[in-house]
Image (cartoon, rainbow, N blue to C red; front, top):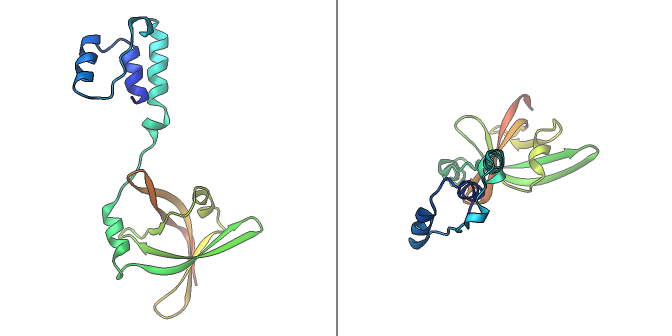
Length: 165
């Protein structure tokens, strides 16, 4: 059971007969014995608050099927080089990306630590324009897009001063 469900059951807010009926329906419900039901109101509030503020509740996963469709369409997909700078260290990587209708850059997810590096002011995406010139884009914000539990894209908002040739 999720932490919030456990907190509600332990608070005694759900009648044990109702819990038994739900369990008979095949739902994964843990029955709480009478001696495990909390009676102190402060403990109940703390338990529910901790459950509401836990990772299961506050983590919002964005899924965008239109983004996936756009990325898979060769008309929108482009190739570039992501130059990641962290202090004196620099790494480059060829990436496929697409732009969204709002002007953001969608790049397939690479690693857990990259989100912060994308907005550090030194990291940029380099690509060729239609005229063959190099364009450089720096980013001011990054959000994650999921498909199921899997991170699929980082959608990067260009910084106001991040575009140059």
